[in-house]
Image (cartoon, rainbow, N blue to C red; front, side, top):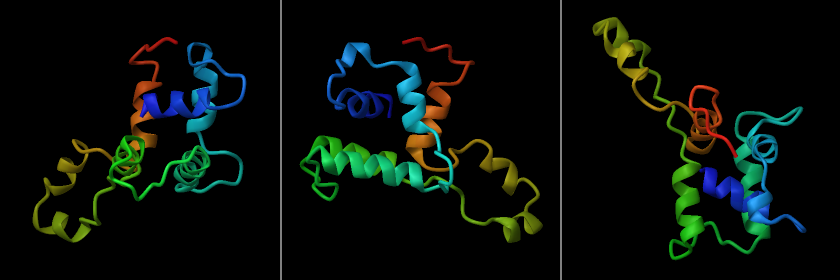
Length: 117
């Protein structure tokens, strides 16, 4: 996901990939004013299409990776299961939550990881 973010930032006119900043990646990754949960994904898709990628083309490596990153990993509603199995909801904390690209960048950009660029 970070590689895709850097690709999108570096695709802007006049931006050299080596000069891409953390602020640019964070701006790309965060919800903008008035956006909903899926709007970050929509924005990225629009940029990928503008760069000439057919998001349905499995032969395009960028599009193929994007389909993985855009996947929503939120668990199905397991409230009913929790009534039968009190540990069912505990399992969910061990799994990824939300859209892969957003979740992944949140982790990569977190202070805990300490990634600098």
